[in-house]
Length: 245
Length: 302
Image (tube, rainbow over all chains, first blue to last red; front, side, top):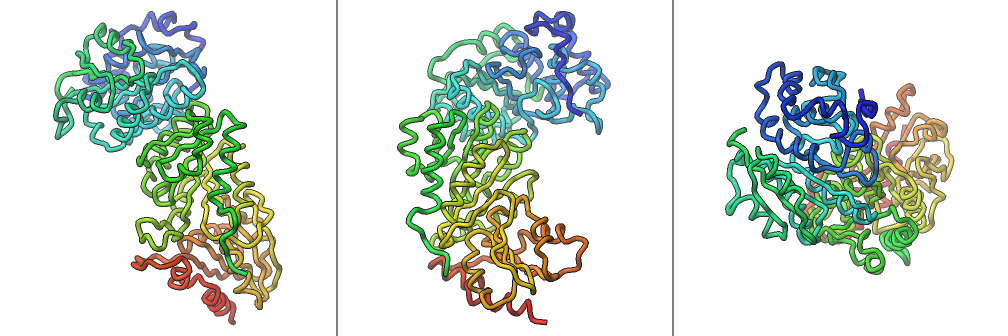
């Protein structure tokens, strides 16, 4: 079952929505609990929660009413595992009905353990197999650039997901091409078995990216890093959260 | 009459026509991984934002095509067969149809055009692999004129299309119609389906046999309607320039309610550790004219 956009619930921006105003950040644990049965949600949902909230609340130029507009910003959840935080934020912002959350994982539910772009409004890509979102994001940024659209592309990856070689094909090319409409958020809970010598930010910097590392629970720091302009460079923000979170 | 190299190769025609289309269609973009760049040098000067070379990064080539399509563009990705289909197969599977977008993949090298380069540059499994995915059109043109028609048709559409170019072509083009087989000759003992560049060889091998010959420039969707309509006898031979048996399931499905015999001719599953010419590989795989004549004749014997 594909959901329809909940445009009747909102006006023109997420924050202008009566529903969104009603459902703030503090409501997210309750929404996640609708999927998990209790508020002790999974680590992968927890690690991304604050980044997702800041993106949809303060960074991305996208709302239910504009979710099909060519010039909207695109958010790609590459790390598709544990998408409860993502669904909760989408519900809080009016993209999907809150009632749907309790169907999570059911046969006829649009909300699976990995998000499906074709079933859920506002979800820009289907993810689950790691290492696809960032390479697709490079193509998306190139396509928007060729069409002279001002949209930005933000991709969320996990630190362990960076093990996938496909990411490094994308990191290298985006740096060489100076794709400044592309931002990658690496949620770093130090789950990569072998880590990255010199740090994750350094891996991107050597390819020409503008890099910063911030507290992944600090909303102001995240918003500041995610909205900083770097002309002629793609941006990576390493959002550091608790180990294993 | 045998498959020959024509003045303008299939690949040259593809590059020329696609470059023209990039000029006229602002939605169209070409993604390359170094290979094939020479054919797009001038187009790239005119459209640096839409002729994109990702370097030797084949997974990225397909993912970039996906991103372009998600942004509303019509991407064409082109490379050697194993690097376009086999190496990035998960990207072909997940980044295109699964994302609800379409791209045109155009391969060069066929099964063993690069016979002297060895196994790493050969991919007779490509059509079987792409056939395993839903909703792909697969074209196997037999002549540069057919390439032009099929490329133009694919660019005008929005779905996923795989076009397999070959180094050897039939002497004359066929009036291909995407998704349809053409009747080349009618006979009473069997239907022989010849895919793309196998047509000339098949016609010569069956010149003295009383068989219908169908030409398949498109193999997916498989034109079961024409096969059923032309089935003069319950015997079918499929002559394909890629993995033997690739279309066997489609023949069985088309004739599911008719008792029939079938002979699948194609590239056998084997590690052929030889170099040399494509013609030598034809002989090794029993795809040369004499072998075809012998195999089809033997199949038709009562």
